[in-house]
Length: 286
Image 1: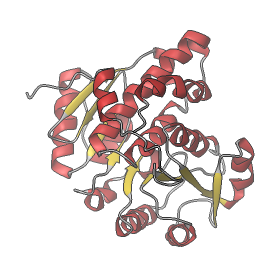
Image 2: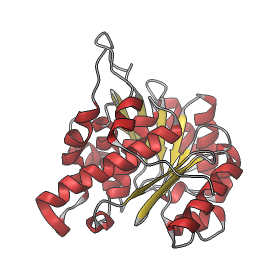
Image 3: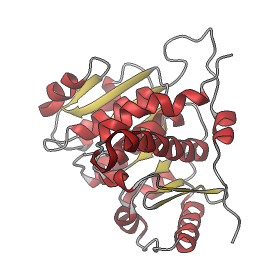
Image 4: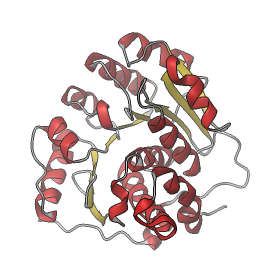
């Protein structure tokens, strides 16, 4: 089996793109977060704030109209775009693309979202047409999208159950089995996979990185939404494999910082609070 990469802070610092002192709003990434439903309005909020904390300049948050007021109330930094339906339909997918003020560099889709199968396929096609890099999570992880994602620089971030649904195979439980399965699936489908669990496996089929979960407290709901937003923010400025493993590593550091403050009682918003300290060592300005 080919060797895996040992992720180090030095490696991430070298990969993190520097920010130009002459840059303007939008130069450091425009991100679309599409998620949420009548019962899950927190997921797209967590992802959106994480994307902003990644260093992205602009984040648009597309959610059903029924929850747009609740989403807007979380933070004045959220630019919420109201979708007409309570779930992602083909009509709302078309509406989303039409209402975008600017083309997004990257999009994270699926967090807390109710989705019609043909709608997520339609939205992925639309994103491809606008040359937007794509990250799919949660309910967007269905086999029907794999053909559309192939060789597009896309990321998927499943946990074990979503991995089985997406690829039709069990990823295994040992590190060796998971690495082998993820590497094979990534190679076959031409995508970057970030399998979440007690150990995180990130692979694009050629390169593979493993990052052990920083604390058992990271099982709390919402930590995956933070990861998706963070990865999408980095994807706007980085290569898919680099963005995926850097996001997993940084999310883990933020989790460790949250654990120091709150122990096993941490919640997902504690991760958001820890992201600036987790990312600051990698800041570069040219």
